[in-house]
Image (cartoon, rainbow, N blue to C red; front, side, top):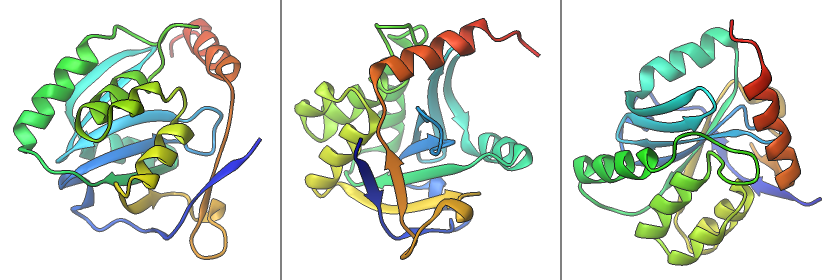
Length: 182
């Protein structure tokens, strides 16, 4: 399977995730990574544990750092009124209850959001690497930042986003749903 190279991945500035629109990959080294949308400091996430909508990003970052989990965030360039974009994202995420094997993944509300603002063909992306490739080809990707990824960055601060299959996603959903809660 091919890899997708995300170049020039840098350490974050303190207010990076508080401004703009970000595609976040939580634990990007995993197959598949968990995907999160961040808009001006509020994040939106669909997981087997439920929906997180309009949560402040600082709590997620604090928890990730405490657990030593990695994060890769890619800025997506387009404009809009942040409050309206957050409200729209809230509505899109609430259309999905949770990821379901063979039906829904954490990518779906995110690709719907980007399809509304960048290009309708983004709605066809089934994987984050497809979404990233289309966003990048259309010149909509901006800077990339990371937390706890130094050990996985290559050469010129590049991260290789690995590909995976729908079967990998379904297996992950199945394992997470069958995992006893702590």
